[in-house]
Length: 612
Image 1 (tube, one colour):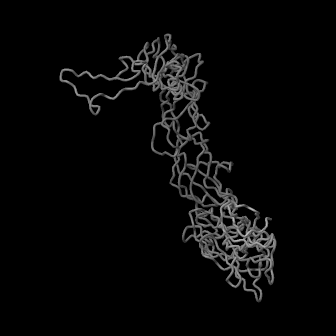
Image 2: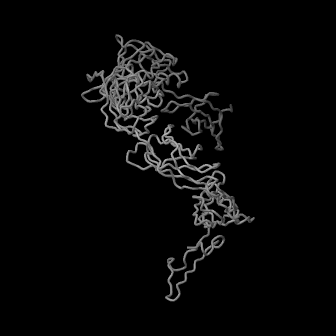
């Protein structure tokens, strides 16, 4: 150290971890090579850096030494683990006094200097179930709990979220009982509420029992857990204290003197679908209440007095969660109809434990009939979209297949597409695509619905005619937005019933509609081009090196299954300038009503006939 000089001034300052000055200009008293600084009041538990500086006569500020210093106040730690872990061994926890204190302080009993010996709760998650609004005693286990023995004035309380505290009782050194009452906080069936247990000495100093598991109680409501009597009786009795109340017609807490053990007859609310073929094999879904506390409770299902076989696939029955329910209580019944000798209608009923439903839901057995097909001819190449007309074609689950002669009619679908639950009278048709490869005309049709033949070899008449023959297609021009009209010529074009242009580029498919005008003439509107093609052309327009002003794309024109490739050159869309009049309003002279429209790229594609 330099020899003492009267003109030198020694000072200390405190700096935090971010080099922010906490305190400065603290006078340092020198005694030979030792310096003493009086520390200021620091209001928080923090580790700071203390620096010793000397200020010379030339006003230089020279750092002589530095070290770290911990400012601590044990009493500020309110939890046992905080006291031990965050004080760098300067503090101990005193259970007797429920407080953190310096190591030099005395503790009558219960001195803790390791977090393993802090008073704490053990893991009891997923064990405690509490009904909303019902006072319930909950037993938690713990370690190193302070018993309220003679001379010791320990008090325990339990709290959950923002709810009021409740008094707790120590059973012994390893368990504690909390009496809790929790209102229904949401519309959930179950909700977990974290619980905290506090203990205090003489109701002055309070600390929370350590709980690394974040123990909780599960709040439930019988009414929300079980929608009917069957589900109420199926609830897990080790978790839920519920019973069915006939007075309120609800599942209630058992303390409300509800003890029904027999449920009422099942109630059917809906059946989907409401009709099917007389051949049976239609899978129907029955929705309702009190369908049984277990699948074994169901005696029989009858549809128009004909037995319906319940599926053995439990996953289809929407069986309730096995954790909350002891038995397999179904939320719906799915069964397969039997066959009927004739068309008939009748109610759908279920027998559960001998109690039969009193249903007014009607199911109809019907016979599908084919009356006509349209069109009656098409090209030999196939591809004709055929519409089959008839009666009762939309019955069952509408899983339809069509066979023309012995070949499948492709992509069959019902029209209109209505939900299976729709019960309003509707005339359905079946639409499918005629395949190619036939060696003779089509004279019969077979239809299956729900994998059962419902129309067998019904006589029809479909004649194969010559395929359309297209004249060579020269390259065409179009705007990126599409809509440009092109003309296609050929022979026998009207032997097809549907014509279109497809542009299939990468993942994009665009379709342009065509109109078959006659045997020799068809007009089509070019489909719009994919946007990324337009972006590519715009980028080339904005570069110094000019590329082509259009993009060539190969398209396909279809006449049913007959198709030809041709090329379309896509140009950027034209732009039209605003009208030149004031406010874009043009005034005309009485003898001159010509309007001039100007823009860019107007005649790249369009002809006089394209402008409207």
